[in-house]
Image (cartoon, rainbow over all chains, first blue to last red; front, side, top):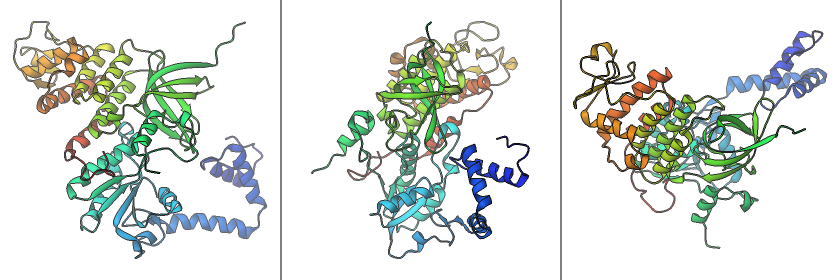
Length: 202
Length: 266
């Protein structure tokens, strides 16, 4: 992004930094930068501190690999949660989605990615070993694979199923079917056929 | 004055996906008429996207595509075949992805290769219909032939003399089988048993249906796989990413039936 030669260097630098954020185009970057220029020093300082804190205090939970400021994370230490069920997700953000939906009271495991053979993302690039360690003590009865229903997510689920199978732990997969508000006309055959198989008594 | 059409239709198999931005993906497609091309699907990662589910790697779909300034854009997509058996079986999925990567690596954009699309469909259909993953060997042999790297299998690749019925060297630098006398000049390769040599010739000569009907033991498949992998690496001058995955899957404990109905990953 070419800033005019007259743009003071600190502002140009801030615009450039905003522009690198996801979903921020050149115009939005400029607007944000000039907004920061106008806010009170305290407000700007608070933003800078928040960004610094995130980088300094947030790390991965040593048990479930969730992002946390206290290790182990809140989900792993919460005694009210069921330690015999582990929900495996692709990324930490997915935990928020599952929590928002409610209904799940077990623990989590974050893989930080999915298998992507063509792009060279293999099992050793994911946190699968840590999951196997957790299954070692025999407390876990069920592993719920909550990876995305994409080719990569399915491959990851099947891969982990094959690995975990011999340990005698039950491996389940989230149901696949129609999202609420969907249009049958636009639904792909694969989803529709799975939705038929997974139909339930009214 | 006739205007250049701004959209076109294509039917193809999706080879790979790359996610960009918040909800967009770029798909690489190999199609019958256009050859290989990239196009972007806007908002396809949102649940409400109408094209979601029709655009997935290893899916055969029909597309309406709008020409873009830098990248073409998917306007519509509809599944022709979703290869469900393939995507729900790890060994098959890995093999199919491996074939998809081969197509990607052996082609350049917008240059359709005669016969390649039907070869890719043939192998996907075969895997879907329950054929063993050894059909990948047929795919490799035919792919090399289609793209101008046809293997010399009937006579020595170096001196042209007929090959006796014996263990024979498959040499990447020579481009095929090499007789015993020429071996020192062949700069390495893999020695293939007579059975493996016969399977290679059969794969080169026969139709996919005929090849699929032959029982190839895992040992024989392993022999051919390593031999052909050397050929492919020599031709592409690089390793294939999916090879590693195929190997990872091969090392896994064998698939076993789900312990209880409902709920288990198939």
